[in-house]
Image 1 (cartoon, rainbow, N blue to C red):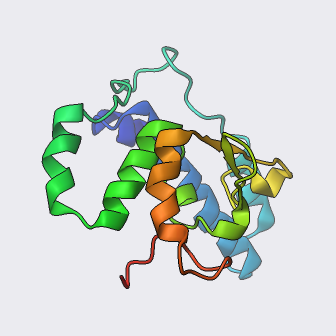
Image 2 (spheres, helix red, strand yellow; image 1 turned 180 degrees about the vertical axis):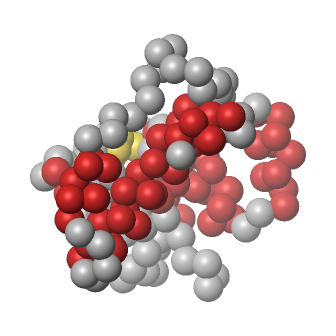
Length: 159
């Protein structure tokens, strides 16, 4: 099956992703009692394709969005989205971490604020994540903290 994916000009990453999806389907089929566990066990031994060690094509690395594109979008988005764009640029945080920001998660006692999201991509491993918010980032956040419950999301789409 992987060879068909490669022959169809799928990239190495997409082939590996497709293989993972197939494994998940077979795992579900075992749990549902539709196939023998040996089939899924055999699939788990299939190693992912490695960079430069297979015939699947490689993709170009992702690059940041050009600043000109960001500047072109800014006038057309809400003030919440503008603040999120600014925070992402200033902190390097993931968008998903910022949209769930609440006052209760931000330590505002120092010159640099510390935002500790309760849920992030490595939280299930027990890792803590701290996002540092400097003076320019504080300006983006402060206006959304006023008159809001400390456990409410700062960037509400309802507004």
